[in-house]
Amino acid sequence: MNSAQVDAYLRRIGVEPPAWPTVDALRELHLRHLQTVPFENLSIHLGEEIVLEEKRLLDKVVGARRGGFCYELNGAFGALLAALGFDVALLAGRVYGDGERLGIPYDHLALRVRTVDGGDWLADVGFGAHSHLPLAFGDRGEQEDPGGTFRIVEAGPDAAGVRGRHGTAQAADLDVSRDGRPQYRLEVRPRVLGDFVAGAWWHSTSPVSHFTRSPVCSRVTEDGGRITLSGPRLTVTAADGTRDERELGADEEVLGAYRERFGIGLDKVPVARNPA
Image (cartoon, rainbow, N blue to C red):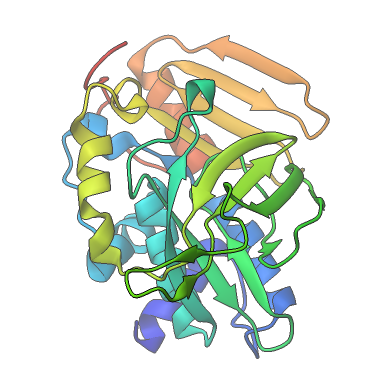
């Protein structure tokens, strides 16, 4: 990213350029990203191509003022953080589903971010309802966050490490949980954006993927709650957990909600690719 792209991205999320890549700067960037750039899968239901290349991600998130799902949001956010001087690694995860079964390889993309003053952090602006602030990567205890109580623990019977092809010790995968429920299992080996192309294609096309079943658009609100538009249903959840739900009517009302609540201007209402 060049300096003009960095400045445009920071204007998009309403953050002044940080002087140094510190923990406080990362926390502000993370929270403001969640509040201003929605988690959304609308491209799938609008017939738009999803391309995991930095320029295309910036064109969408910054230029078109859209959102995206994990590969797009964390891919773009990781590029911004790297341009600001943070040490960033892309990590692959597998999401826990029904019955605590793990999803496909490269099911999720998250970030390991190293700051100049506070070690390593798990940053994730692409998982929908998740932590509002980065989580301490090496902390194995409970971590309180406005989004819930989180834990990062070593996974499986080989928690102390596993053996690679040549007998060398390899770090164990990590399980990330929220309020006692496992969210995803994270590999610690760094990846590149191109590694996630197959996962993005599967989630964009497979009738088994929940992403293809209904359009969804969601972001954190300034008071710490969440607002979500799933199909025509608008849900506003306050920070204390109280919910207000209502069904929107005509297409104009749905398009108005995308525009006024999420800053997304669409010409037509997204239609579910593989309705449930």
